[in-house]
Image 1 (cartoon, one colour):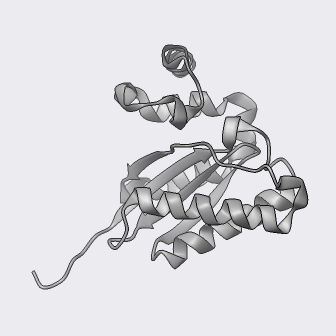
Image 2 (tube, rainbow, N blue to C red):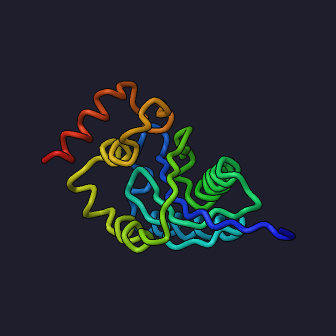
Length: 167
């Protein structure tokens, strides 16, 4: 084959340092989401949606065949952290948490995941970020770290996730 083809839809989640509510102001949050979408597109990642809550972000995009997910995440975190500090003196201590969660998404589930991301405000009235990530990670708990979820007690995270799902 003379060309390289790739279409890997990715659901990316990452949080603010120590899950501090740096993005609680709605306009800052909207601007951050727009900025993150712009950076993703600059990295040739077709972006469906970027949204989130006061302490974390979700993005749904097609990972470019030119970039590794770790490189894309590093760049969007680095540039957005610098950007928010430049536009808002109140955010001079802003940082993203180390780590991230990234999941492949089937083409047939794009609309469902997009709706989930779009509904973050309502979703987080019922479930914390730790519970959400635990829901996504179910069977891969051995690969989870404190830097991904911002917790020292992974067993507690997964227990609360599975308890919620079984209700």
